[in-house]
Image (tube, rainbow, N blue to C red; front, top):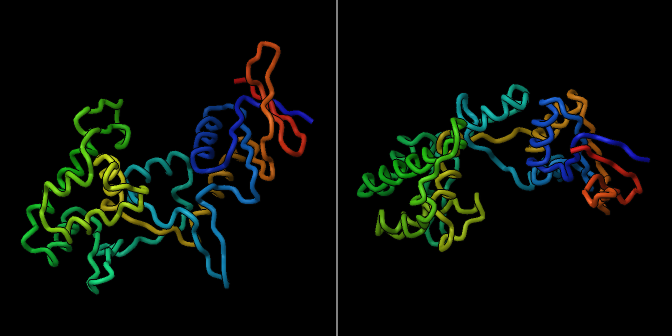
Length: 266
C-alpha cells in the first residue's frame, strides 16, 4: 500500500510537528510518521498513581502576551486552548546547595529578579543589574528570537563564555553558582557553553514562566488536532525502516516496518 504526499515528516517531536503544521497551513499535503505509541518526543508524559509526570517539558518561558513563544503558539493556533498555570513570580526556580538551607530564587521580571536576589546578596545589586542588562543586550542581537526581521549576528557575542562572563561580573562564588544554577535548562557545560545560549534560555523564563496543567503532552495533542484540520495525516506505530529512491537516484519515499510505503513530491 502506498500513499503520496507533498511532504513526509519523520518523527513527531515538537520540531517535526511544528514544521509539519507550518507546511500544512501553507497548503501542502503533509504526513507525519512516528515510530512510538505516543506522539510528541520530549513532550510525552506518563502517570503514576493518577499523577501526571512530564518527561522533558516541565515548564515554559516567554508565554505572556506579546512574548516570543506566545506569538509562535498563537500563529500555530494552539495558544488559546493551552491549560497553563503561571509560576511563582518571586521564584519560578529556587537554587539550593547541600551545605546551605537557603533557597535562592530566580524571579520573573528583570527588576524583580534583581530585587529578589539582592535580598541575599545586597552588595551584589549592581552586578546583578549588569548581568540582566547583558542578557537583554545579547538577546537583542538575535532578531528571529524576537520575531522581527532577519538575523544579523554580532560575531563578538558568539564567543563569549558563560562561566567566564559570570566570573567577570562577580567574585562571589555562591552568587556565581546561583546564576549558573539554571544550566540544566540547556544541558549546559559551564566550561564550554557560550553565553548567548545561557542568555536566550534564561531570558524567556525571566520574562514569564508557566507550567502546563496536565502536562506538556497537551501541546502535541493540540498541534496534531490542527494538523488534521488542515488535512494532514499523522500516524504512530509507523517506524521508517527504509528509504526509497527513484530511477534518478533521488529520495522519493519511505517504507515502514509494517511494509507500508509513503511517497513525497518535494
